[in-house]
Length: 377
Image 1: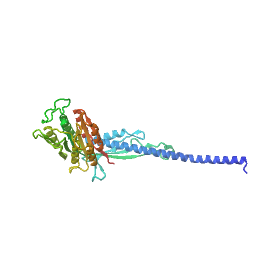
Image 2: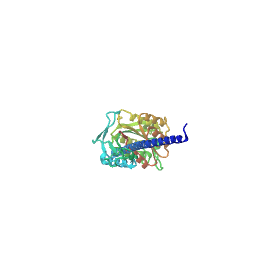
Image 3: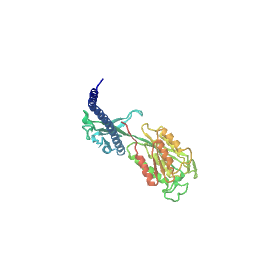
Image 4: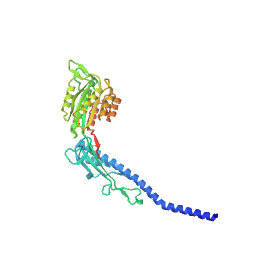
């Protein structure tokens, strides 16, 4: 039988063994904790670097599409990068890390291939670096004093490509478009729209839209549809179907200008069959003139409320199924903003509302400048 003294010696021996085990294990545990913390820190730095580099390439590509100026595009990329932080510091992208060039596909399912330089510039490549040789330097590890390596050097490359668009204007020529802005007599129903009418404001906005398209470098193909209802009268001067395709997709905007001039010079009228316009817009954007690499985009304008034919949301679903983006534009307090916002949402587009003729022109200019940009690497 063990005496009390023996038992005390055994207990002291066990305590000594435990303390020795803790002494041996503690550094290992600290290294494991340090490693786990720094792995998470490195992953965060990689994610932040990817975000900053993507943002820089997208900003540069957008400015390139609008200006076709490599220096301005490079400056925009550098500025966008600086607005993002990596490992707690503003991202620094050097001018030499931004390349301007051309990004192309061999076919619709192929990857985009980037080549620096070229004549038809459409892409910006940004090399984001947090390395010892970069301006920002490497990322310091939080537990660097406990590990053999004290810094981390992540790199990330992003290429953003500005895409061409196929655009179809779908405009409202219903009777409410004869309304005089600010009040007043809309004139004779069988006469052309008056200069102060909603239609006249639309005609000016469309002209501004075409000016902006011509000013941007991407080659947008353009088509046009108008809609109201089946209207006959005015001794044959008013003879329009519910929806009419005026022009098919073409890089030549002269036919669309001529179509607007013709509509402005003749009587308009009827009800508001928005879905008929959408469906003809889909026919234009999916017709044989459609370019395989262009983004199909519909600009749908109305000043009123859908009151004839199928529900516009159904037309929007058909457009979405064809990968068509719809920008909806409502004009006047009489328009159905909620429904047109839904139409845009269904296709991944945007809704705009104009209260005045000036607002309408500004919106059409903004849509023309909204260039599709994708990160292709």
